[in-house]
Image (cartoon, rainbow, N blue to C red):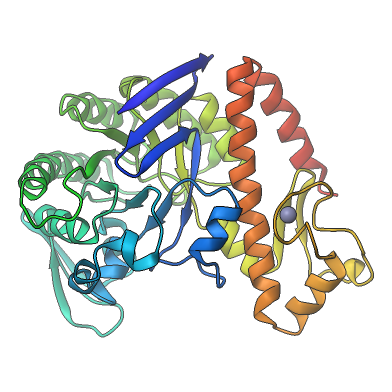
Length: 376
Ligand SMILES: [Zn+2]
């Protein structure tokens, strides 16, 4: 259940109530692809860096260790020892981007596993069954994510199929949630808006899927190669077509600047691999731009990554030490950078929520954006 607490322009400050606790929005979900955040980050660490929601990938967990294994271990929450909300994606995006030799049919997609090449079939029902076995808090509908440069005619047909798949997802989830051996019988379903960069297709699709009265709505298929301006144009067109009294999730986005802009357009859920991926490469976020800790100028720098940051890295360690760890390929270097970056994102969302509540989001956004451009 989503409760809209405050609006400031189009920006939304909300609370999403789930069986695993309340999510304060806007929120950044921390991406743990295979039930762990890459960079040796444990679920205990997540408690310390302000993580509200962990996101895991259905496709990866289906291939390895297998969703049946996770179910036998009591579901993802027990398996990874995390009692707060978990969102699982549908597997669709990975099927379309990672798997080899795929064939899309009305019933679903035939493809080969990227791990061992074995043949797999996944359609709306299979995706829902896998996510039910994983027992996540929020399941995503199985959709096709057409390329942002796909032909209009292809996108139109693809989106129509995605709508038919969404109906099948909703029915299958209702069935699964009613079974006695289902671990999370309160699993929620988010539908996904598609339509590449065609505003009219996106708007029509949004109008169709909002009729289904789902628990939340995502905008998918953005941040896959189009420009930031195109992404903002699509958000300007489509977000007003989605229910204001439900969460709006912009999938796979993005940079801190992208998030600030999307919040201003009414988005309140985000996820992205940038903070963990960049952290593993020694690239760290600050309010004065991104730093590359491999840079020689940090060799004797006693300051933390960011002055005043309360993350586990900045509370104790210097840029010089972390730089040394990264250069020596010590796992701790990568870990500290990932912890800082995730904390930075989670903390940014907290500041965003405060600014919306205070009714000064526009001014806050402007100040943050000019800071990021400093690149100290
Ligand atoms: Zn820090």
